[in-house]
Each structure stands twice: as structure tokens, then as C-alpha cells.
Length: 490
Image (cartoon, rainbow, N blue to C red; front, side, top):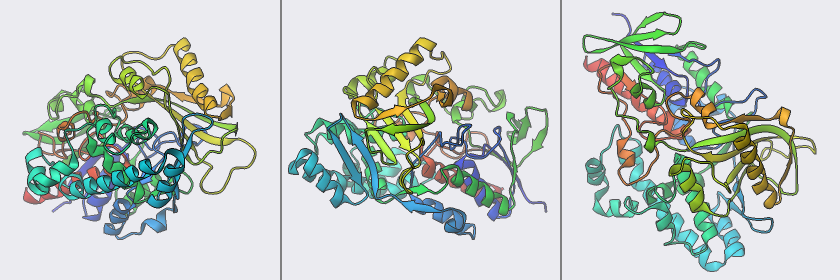
């Protein structure tokens, strides 16, 4: 009896994780990727600078994937733990470092804002730990949890601890009086592309995830994508690049395969789609599967970004690997992005100094990713030259206000706008995290690994359990598990 054939659309982290698990179980897997390299949102610009995710957490997720495939993560990748998680600035004189060690962070907060705020930080960490432990098994590792099943697993006391009906911003007020600290820890909402004024307090758990370990990948994040790709091939998967899929075919009430842009047809017993589920919902993969996923509401999209990748000399501010420079009006920033569909006037700016952390750069130029939040409307309009010039002036003006001067050369800078991200990830408007987590029920509205059409499965950051590289890997493993169970039962 021939081995079942599974096609995976997209060589992002979720698709590659699914391919690894399926190939490990003897399934014939073909991964089709429209780009010329693996990674999906893990990507580099033309100069080789990381232009996507820059933070790696939840190492045990990757260790488990490699272990289950009979391999070792350490043999494929060099990872180094970060002692300093991030450096934060509000002005040239207001700076705060956070560390993986809670005691060191508490000491820094004491100096920055006083003993009471440090005590609040400790209580915040306790709450974040409780939320994480409550949700880890019944939510993050479950196939498609609902509110009732999660309540049954966690209990009423557990659900009260999770605080699903309080906003993150309001809950932070239980721990911090200093508005700068509420701003700092409210930023965790943006890790899922959401506003801290609308996202649930549940997202506090990200603080605990970071304290468990933030890892720097030697050689950049693309090394992770390459490691996943190499393992998939070693286990027997076939990876094809520059192979865009334009249609998912059906017949007899189930998925039958895919059609490539060049007209080639590939018959499959199952298809895993590692694109944003909005691409299916808007017809990018054909009419036959259009209604196999929930509607992808434009007004529910996560935020997009404007990014600059460049190699430049910096002066005036001692950069860490991860740096955050806060705007003056946090409420205005998220109101602009989510309600008015505009770029913020005074944005919060994230800078990843990719040559820091694993040694110190020479006095010459260093590689930088500069990022601000932006509305997910890249499918409707692009920024004009005037808007882009204003955006650049405001963004680098925030850096200068905080003491950092970037001596940049326009010719050596790559800029990506929401329209650029829409081109890379169609049907998203440039939204980088699927649907925003706004409200207590938002996380339950994500699709699970099974679509409504037998044989069509979903993976990636837009589906359960959510955005971020570790979560995408978990989604791919959940999809592979569903495929294996369904093929066995059939």
C-alpha cells in the first residue's frame, strides 16, 4: 500500500514543523514555497539583515520537535541565552534595562522608579507565571480549545487568575503606578499585533515566557529557518521553492491536491496550508475552499509595521541587542493604528542591533532593524512619498530624543511598508499576526488545525495557538497530528 501523500503550502516555521513530524512518521511530504528560501516571516533583506522575527523564546518547543525526529537542536543551531532582555528609553535620561533574572530587573526598577514599583513588578511576575501555567496545557497544547473546555480544564479559580475580561492596560494598573512601567509591560500586547487598551490581561503570560529564556541565534534568525528546512529534508520531505500555489482542489467532498502557478497539478491525500487563513477566506486558493475557514474580518486584523533595515554607524546611546524607545502618548499611538488607520505621530520604536549580544561591533557600521507599529491597510493604499518622509523623520526623531543618533545612508536602507507586507503575505493588509487579540473571546475565534473540508488543514501564526515562531511551530505540530489521526481513521 503506497504511503499517503501530503502537500504543505508554505515553508514557514509552521509548515516546516508539520513536514518534519509527518516525514518522521513515514508520510510522503512535499513542501511548496513561493519564495526562493524557507522561513516565511523569518526572512532577511537583500543585504542579509534579519527583517522578520528577531526574538526566540520557548526553546523547549524546538528541542521537542528535534528530539521527536531523532535529532538534536544543538547539532543544527548555536543558541546563546540573553541575560539582558531589552533596553528601554523614554528620553535621553530615562532608561531601564530588563533582565532574564527577576531579581536584577527588580533592582533596576527600584533605581528607576522606587521600591514600591519593584514590589509591583514582583507581583506582576507572579501573576504572569500563574496565567502561563494555567493556559499551557489546556490552551496552547490543545487542538482547538473553546471557552467551556478551557474553563472545565482550568476551573473557575484558574479562569479568574487568567483575567480574560480585564484589559491588559487596566490589569497593569494593579501592579504599577508609574505610567512608564505600564507602557513598558503593555507592549506585550504588540507581540500578538494587538493594543494593550483592547487586549486581555491574559497576555501578561508573555512576561513569564521571556523570563524562561530569550535566545540569540548565532548567524541570525534565518539559521533557524534553515535548520528546520534541513531537518525536514533529512527526514525525507521534498522542498520546492519558487513554486507558488494558486488553487487547492477538491473532489468527492474532500481535498484532492493543489495547482501551481505554472499549471502543474499535484494530487494529495491531505493539504496543510501554512498561509494566513485570510488568503483562503478571500479566494487566493480558489473558490472550492473559500468557505472552509471563518471570515477574515478587515476590522479584526492585527497591526502591521513600517520597517527599516540598514547598516549604519550609531552614536550617543549604548545599544543592547533589543531596544525600545517609547513615544510620549501610548493611547494616541494605538488609537491611530487601530481606529483611525493612520501612522502614529509619535511612535514607539523598536531597534534590533543584530551585531550586539554576541560580542560588540567594531567602530564601523552595524546591522539594524528599526520598526514602528502601523495600520494593516496595505491592500487599500501605500504610503505616499510625503507620508514616508514624515514617518521617517518622526521615527528617527524619537531615537534622537532618546539620545541615539543613526548615521544612515538612504541608498543602503531597505524600507518595508504595510503594502510591502501585503505583497509578501497576501490578504492580510500587511497585518503580521493574523487577527488581533481584542476581547476575551478573540483567541477562541482563531481557526484550529482542521478546516471544514476534510483533508484541508491549517498551520501558522494566524491559527491556533497564535502568532510568534514557537506558536507557529506548535500549530504545525497540531496540524500534523490531525493529519496522522485522520489518515489512520480513514
